[in-house]
Length: 381
Image (cartoon, rainbow, N blue to C red; front, side, top):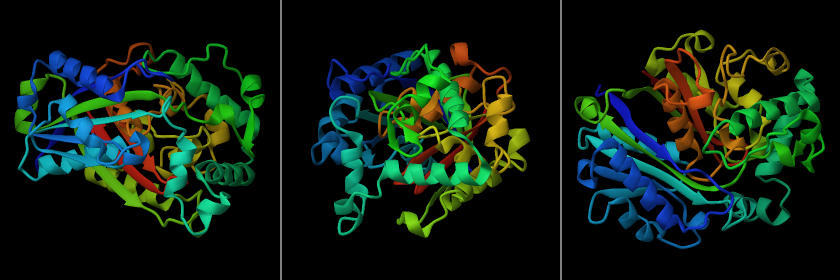
């Protein structure tokens, strides 16, 4: 099978209120990425945007963004999902043999132009769940967190400590929108309670921003970089729609997607073979559930993982050393940012959050209430 590499990446400095429009954001981002790589738009065979008409606030939204990335009158398409799904689509396009290179870009103005929960409401069942507004992304996360905490005696203090870990990582990430140098367990516990046990401090930082990556076939990779990051395994699964019909702790779709990616990459023991994980967590409480479903830590071990610092930088498997979505969550770009951040680690370009000797990483993205749909990549240097 043809191998596919990530040969270039770049993201914006995310902000809660961008001074310029999305078109300017992605134009400047892609232009600077081309310059950094020493290429032009003509070196790209296919362009894939991750955006959404609801989040853009207009139909056929790519009409206004396609020209800004150099894709006018060229092969382009849009994926109305998280950016890592767009990267998966680009990966498959290159595997087809019809394309050698692909630019993938995800972007959003979710910090300033719209309220994320209102757009999320339109993904809920229109006849029952949406009018009643009992089940939504926040309440689904609360049900999941409550179930985990009750089953494994994971306390609010433990969850607060986990939150602080990610906020500390985000403080050292120059791209993060959220900076809390005084983050503490007490401050997290004192934040507004939304749905028990979810507090405002646990919620990811919805922001304005974008991320772009360039993927290449093996035969072209060395043309672009001497530090390619290889996509060695992928997996994607979607669970049933209704929250009440699935086990929020077992996470079948995530566990299945991870197994597919591990098998493809030849990973037999992820706890020993994975050096770091970049996960798309919309809420801090999702981290223990996700890592355990992916086989990174033992079921129910989150209390010890937090206490022993196993998921910290320098721990056995650092999780979200970038700070993850708690530092910046521009909807549609978040999973793609995870890919860029993990690639930066493998290329030794992660600055203050660099993990020594990192060679293999797992990357994750989600969509839907309660992480209904999951995509997993295994990447290596």
